[in-house]
Image (cartoon, rainbow, N blue to C red):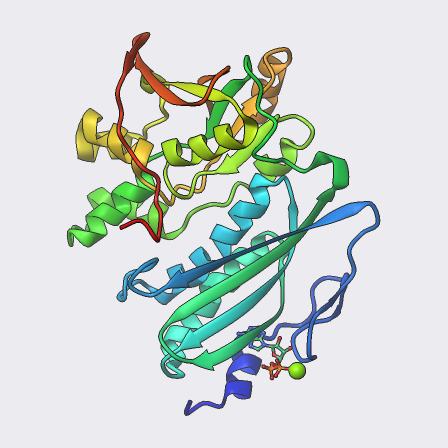
Length: 318
Ligand code: ADP
Ligand code: MG
């Protein structure tokens, strides 16, 4: 690389230490981190491959944001408080404009959640970004996919389908103000960190919606050994999504589309009302269905079961 590897790391990926629990960060052989007593370390990693997880012409700033956001979303789904991140970056050349914008997107999100970048790796190759996010949660309070019980209410945060709509518009070459909010939802997902932490000890199960609501709900149900019934008319669909796509396509995108990074979670019926009003103070949440005994996911419209055929995303499915 024209700009040396070490210069590149120093320029874009080394910051003044911001967290006291980082005993050694970028610049040593490995990060040395102080995990608070009584807390479990929560670790997640996700890789973004150019052409597969982000479009080759995606703004680098959004790639930086997304690479961290998807990992913070996994921590949120465990109820964890994020603390640290590692970044393994493969780029074809030291493109200063691309790296500067990438770093801007990454650090802007990291700053908002007080996450310190404590290490990584930088190599030359096809554009591939792997981030690892680390955080902690009181041992007994971690949210899990398992734990949902028949009778629990099923909830989702925010709105669903917008990100998949944004991606579909980008792929179709549609741009402009009318679709900007949908494209923004795809590029700048908001990890539901505060919601996840608030659900500690409250939600019986949780998962983040990365691969599509029905596919991710099926994973939660499998892990919990239960079934779910989704009331389709209750799905939280944004005005932008409905306006652009109409009701039928909006519903398809909401159920099968990915990249929303909302939290899907279950609450016990006993204290659902009190919890709902507490959560609603800082995040829109919607009661979209119920957990029932059995296996699998069913959908109802106006009380009548309807067949919906959608598969979640699987990289290795043919
Ligand atoms: P080593 O050869 O011991 O693995 P490197 O020379 O590759 O270490 O990296 C030097 C330091 O810079 C290490 O602390 C490493 O974690 C950090 N680092 C390398 N690339 C990145 C990156 N893209 N972002 C953050 N830190 C990085
Ligand atoms: Mg070393």
